[in-house]
Image 1 (cartoon, one colour):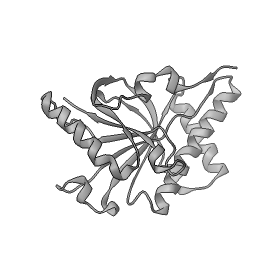
Image 2 (cartoon, one colour):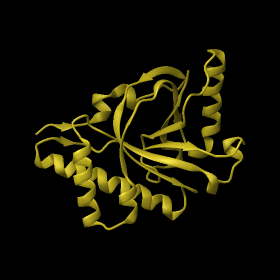
Image 3 (cartoon, rainbow, N blue to C red):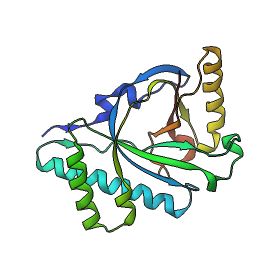
Image 4 (cartoon, rainbow, N blue to C red):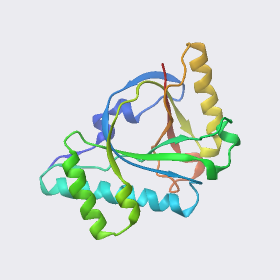
Length: 199
């Protein structure tokens, strides 16, 4: 039985250079869930758990059908609703949409069945908030960030400098792809793709 790994199937999606680069990101199917608040506080971890519960339920469903796949990397879209620099706003005011990409063979019907099974197994209310969405970012500037999340502003600064030089403006949300599992690696070993849709 072949185990599909999206990080190998779509290497341009899950790889970035240690310098800003312009890329085109195709559409994909994603599990998503939204929330607000400090990512270091318990509600965030519960929300992540709900997203993974549905992802692994879909994986189990397709494993029975002979379509085995590795659950891909966690991702996050981040924004604030005030006209201030992101880094100056209290983390309690942060908004986020967490994502996990699904293989092309996963359907909306698969999602509904798997979500119902996940809720039956683990009756977390957040599971009912998980959605199945098609997302296409298109043209983006991205860069690999090495190190802790607290050091991201320097990387974002390089991305924005690249955008200014090439007459590009942001056309979507701050996007992070966590190549190392949050909270599981030493800060200096963490690797995160930072991606900004542009036009």
